[in-house]
Length: 154
Image (tube, rainbow, N blue to C red; front, side, top):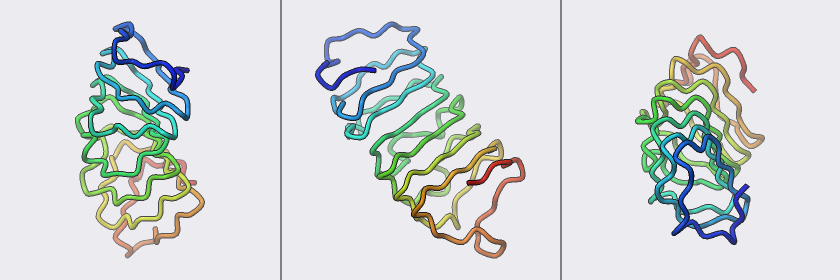
C-alpha cells in the first residue's frame, strides 16, 4: 500500500508492476502508471480523476471515492477490464455506453441509487452487486435489461 505521505511526482514505478493499492488518504495526482499494471485500487480521498490515464491492460479497478461521470475515465477503451468497484460515494447516472465491453463483475457502493433504464450492461457481466441504498426497479417493463450471463445478483 502506498501512503499519502509519498509523493509520486518524481517516483518511477516498475514497468511490470502488476498490482497497486493506495491507502484511504492518498490524494496525489498519478502520472505514468506502469503499462503492466493489472490491478489498481484508489483510496477514499483520491480525487484527481480528470488527469488519470489508466493502463490499457488493467483488469481490476476499485475507485474509492469517485462520484463523477464514468465517461471522463474512458472505461470503454479498457477492453481488458474485468472487475469494476465503484466506491461508496458514487451516485451518478451510468450513461448508455460508459462501461467496458468485457466487464464480468460490477459492484456499486452504498450511495448508488440511479435508474438503470438506459444502461447497456456488457453481455459478459456475471456478477452485479448493489449497495444498501439502491432502490430502483429491476423487473420486466422497467427498461432495465439484465444480461443472461449474470449468475450473481446481490
